[in-house]
Structure formats: structure tokens, C-alpha cells
Image (tube, rainbow, N blue to C red; front, top):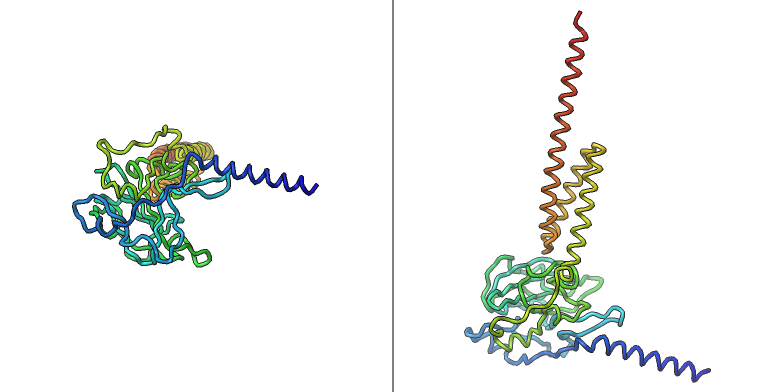
Length: 326
């Protein structure tokens, strides 16, 4: 009986190992490319790229997540869509190339997040776990290679908290395309950190390799293959749910003549649309347009109700006047 248990455990162990190997077989962890030329790239203005910090690794040799590194169980395996560089809080973070800041703001587990579009290369770069309490650049700013973007955040503000601190580091990613080419929700989201698909299949690149290449092929890097539904599914579903809910709200509000209900529905759509827009989701703009249509329909209904009420009052007044005559 004892040997059977040992055999069962051994078989289970082999199956688990095989599962991990199969899950990660098509998307292997990629080590850091050469990072010894940080100073050279930063000093040479003729080169298009530089690394985002003056130093990338701590002397302590603390472990740093690599590109396409995987973590989790076989049922919930996720891959790292960036490279992590560990430095102390307050370390300056610089733009890796000329570009335009398309996003700068708070973003959940990132603390403060900055995105820079580089249209000349059809790439964008992502800088996560920055400090919201120190200076940071504004969205819409045109930047040059080496220009200061922000500073690394402390453990309790960089996506971590006092109860659950996050080791200070820069989550640095690069991707084919511009931020606006991707949704704000789902596996294809533009701010992705850890995702279930292989990052390379979704346009993410190994940053240190791109920087060392000091350029992109003629015609640009190949764009990831993804259909409309595959890429935008999460936002389409979210938008559809709110549109259907808004239509039902409008229908029952007009049927039951609930003006307050209609007004609350319009306010809800405007608030949600603004929130999703701030979060960089196309669904936000769609909801704001739908809120405009909703307000127009509700406004017409209000006007008709007011007109009907006035006609009823005039009719009642006329009846009273005629009835009082001898």
C-alpha cells in the first residue's frame, strides 16, 4: 500500500511538471539582453534609444522579473509583459526616445503610470510603479530622449500599501503600435502587466533587445494578429451591457413617467462614460455619445409631457369658465 501511494505521488508530480512545461513551452522566458551600455546610449545624442534609468540593477542582486517570465498554476498561468529594473525609491525615470506622453495618471497596481507613444517607430513604452507623491510629467507633453518622466515610488505608493508593500522597481514595457491601438480592458489592454496569452503574440517586445538594436526594421515591426472581437471583446461586452441597461432604464422611465428615474439614468451614463474615458477605454467615449442620445430622447419626452400637461390645464380651465356662465 505504501508503494502505491509513493507511485501515485510520483506520477502526479510528473504530470504537474509536464503541465508546466507544456504551458510554458510556446512562450519561454527571455533573459535580459546586454545592459552594459546604459551610459553610452544616454550620452550619444545620435542614437534613438536609451535605457529608462542610469542604473538598472541593484548591487544586492535582488531578483528581477524578465520578459515572458511565467507564474501561477497551470490553470491560471500568466506571463510578464515587461522587464523589471530594481532601484531605490526616488530614482529618476527617463523617456527612452522622442515621443509624446499619451497617458500619465494613477492606474491600480501600478501606482502612477506613464505611457509614451513613439510614432516614428510605431512603438509605445510603458513605465509603471512610479511615485504619485513626487513630480511627474503631464499627459500630452512632447518629450525628447532622456527627458525626465517621473520617479520610482515608495513601497506603499507604487501599487503597494502600508499593509502590503511592493518592492520598489520599474516595470518597463515596449509594444508595437500606439496606446490608442489597444483597448483598456481584457488581455489585450494597453497597460497589461501579467497576461495569460504569450506577450510576444500580443505585440509586446523584449525592451532591452529593442534598445540595443537602436532602431526598427524598414517598414516597422510586425503588428500582432488579432481580430476585432478578440482584441476588443471586453470593451464591446461592457459597452453593450450599459447600453442595454440604459435603454431599459429609458423605456421603463418613460412608461412609468418617472422623471427622477430618467434623470438618474442620464447622470449614471455620463459618470460612467467619463470614468472609462479617464481610464483610457474607448467604451467611455461610446457611453458619452450614448448619454447624449439618452439625454436628447429624455428631453423630448419631458417637453411633450410638459406640453400635454399645459393643454390639459387649459382645457380644464376652459371647462370651468364655461360651466360657470348662466
